[in-house]
Image (cartoon, rainbow, N blue to C red; front, top):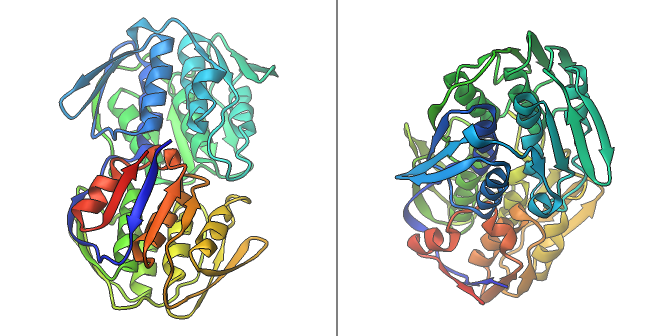
Length: 416
């Protein structure tokens, strides 16, 4: 099993390009199930979760062909509307095949998904929404069985804001009969990216990016070409790494448009940030100031950036309170940061972080994807060597991160 070895003490300096967004790419790959014509996706990140989804789609009959800078997915041969447990056990996003499979094939059999152990992320909102559209659904032996001759438009108000739920229902509604209205919809940029792709395929969607999305179903969708948006979480992670190390970096092929709350917090911490049309530059002070935050659905502070800010607060001046409102199990990285010398106190859904003068290298274990990123940031500023175990989590969401960090001057390498 691979590990990451980091020798701390280097300031990050230079320029690096940001990859396409994992959380946008996964539903966009599933959109290929909705059409018998080819869907060409550009700026696809090379990640383990992407490979898993491509294997899953291939098992269903979708032909996948690499092209310069992207992939062509042809759903014309779709003949197996089944997502087996073996294929989806490591990735919760596999639930995203349920809506498009049901809409296109009239049936679907999808294993209940797995993934990071950061708390309950139930799929009941997906099921309730599809049932409102006329689907007959049973859950047996760990599988969701869904049938519908053709889905009917419906008014759906989700009990909670769910990104994958919104995406699943939006894809299903694209081929349903009549109009579907999704209320309390997720407003994330990745939802908007999916809607834009579906519209280019011939879907009729309005309101994406607001909490009410309207979809007028059509008989069929066409092929299209779509470029995946930049990864806002990768962008934020590199900004945090530069901030913690007192660095000066420029990130290209990205945008600040979806990162307002993250950039505001980094500026509160003392960073100088200049945004361009498709680039961001950050220059950090000698020492950061502690910043408190509260996670909440977009456009508020993203839960996927909470761990990274815990790492920078660990070495900042002052005391910060971090409140996690999305996932009840998402402070597991705190214990590992404490192994490096961080002063963190957990009180329910709050973490109180008291900045220390320095961290010290140690062997730590990644517990989930974003926890891995927080340990890298801490390792970059720690004195001596930090060895991060179980980095397979990291490979699910960050493309060639050790190469990109090395390009910025970090002393980091992958070891067996």
